Length: 162
Image 1 (cartoon, rainbow, N blue to C red):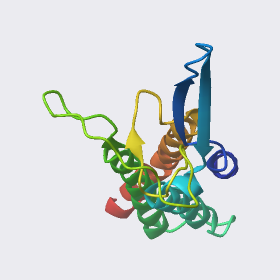
Image 2: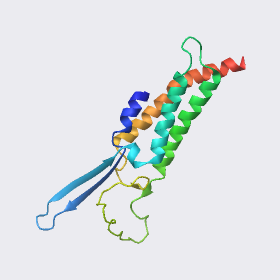
Image 3: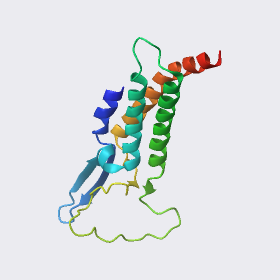
Image 4: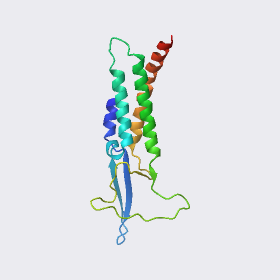
């Protein structure tokens, strides 16, 4: 799962899509710019690193001996933290449109050197489909890693009690 998460982290996690209308011809053009988890969000990047660290911690035990219970606690807390950070980062993406009842505000043109649709790291805005499929796959992989570590966590936790 860790290898799949690394691969997924380079797929599009965030996308900006917009349409343009050419007034003379009436032709509508669709545009999109995408960004991976690494280039769009520090939170998502940190969550991926936490998940990979959890996998590494869990696999770092001696293969002949069972991993120590502390290893299970560390890896489980890292994966849960990664999932929480991913969801919080997703939920904190600012809305692109004003709330109902707010006046429309015009945004200035981007500063020189940037173009319409450029994605600025940690300055993401929510739209109808701005989170791309890589995000959903990454979140599913993080949850799968958490679920894969859960039986070992339960087993090691019960071994320390009894």
